[in-house]
Image (cartoon, rainbow over all chains, first blue to last red; front, side, top):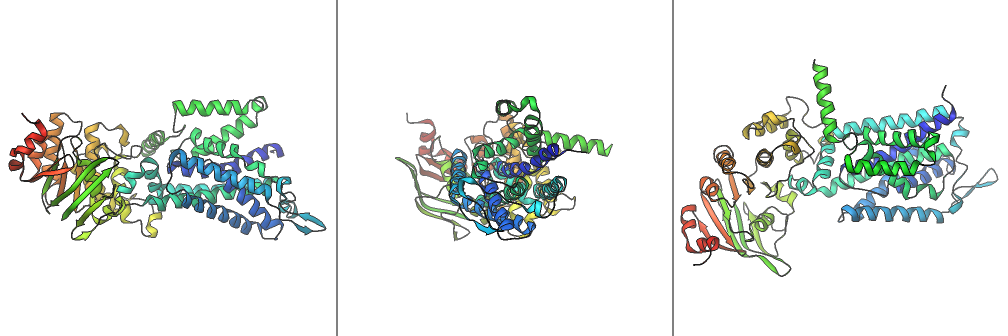
Length: 301
Length: 247
């Protein structure tokens, strides 16, 4: 059987995959966001407050936290409408830092069973005991995480096959040309931002309940940079791309002891090499088309 | 069809267009020519909503479309190609053409439905027909970035006319092509694209202009210097002077 250490790594891969998919969706639309960790963090706090302080059911808290993250992402999308490229990236980074620093000031505690519980600034937010209160094992919670991840993956595969998904890819290829096809890019950029924020939010609430303790420092820029890098390593041609990126980083570099001390060096080097030799990742669009064509030929034969 | 009234555009100190009046008659191929820097591309960008004019009016089928954005002008029925080829390079040739049809469905829930996957999908049929017209049917599944330049131009043209626009604007359709390739694209425009359609062709190559256009307008230094049938226009002294200079 899988031990708790391995299960924790597997569940971590699942949760981080959600924020990676969130950054990937924006990459597909041509937007490089360094701020998806903000939506992960907003949902982590909101979801944990909902179950721990307000006693909401987990599913409701998950939707509430993710919805709030999607709303915040839509708001940022509106504010950053007129900027693109590097300026957009810097704006998302600034917003994420603003959220992280605000969490240092967030104090909202309620007395439960004689103890003050809730976020308390830099001390963070502990006692997120939903999994203990409901006697959820690590295995059961891991399955729950992968259930959510599967739903998101199925949703994203359907999205990629839809007209909306095609518009996202058109935007990522050439925004002006997309506009010349009679489409208003603003509407679709905001739509993508909301969906991406919601997906990051799913990861955030799941993360808070998995680790039972969160603090503002978790949602720092490195989480955003990693989530972005996962798509760039794994590839932008398919939703499986960011999952490959997460599996390489967390499943391989972080979990294998000999790499642990050098993880950031190896990971950073890997990103640099990929950007030079495979700028759109291992599974880029051309490779995905090739794989599909080979699979089709093989299937027909 | 399309009427420009005293359209002007200034970029900083440079007057790119100065009070240009232009009329594009329906059902014919009009040409827009002029030396480099004469304001042709600025004019096309204003007609197609990429730039807004500083002054003047643009009427399309009697409707004032001045200041409309590029997506709005496309919805009004104006489609274009670009001087520097713009394609969705990571998509297939077929997807590039389907991309032009997508906005026909984007106001409804159908935006979430799969795009043209089944063989009896009407949009798929229209897209394939457009590819057949420009002789790109065999390349339908090829990633657009892999096409050579002449085929990219054809793809752009297919993407522009697949929506059956009321006005088709072709910005240098033979740009960067050899004389043989230019002749082929001219035949394509004359025989397959232009019949029954209103077109505006912007081009440097006089043989293509003479071959496909029935009406011609000449710009120089942001001002219109001649308009009329190609034969008459090309014989006018001010046009010869604009291209060849003064003795």
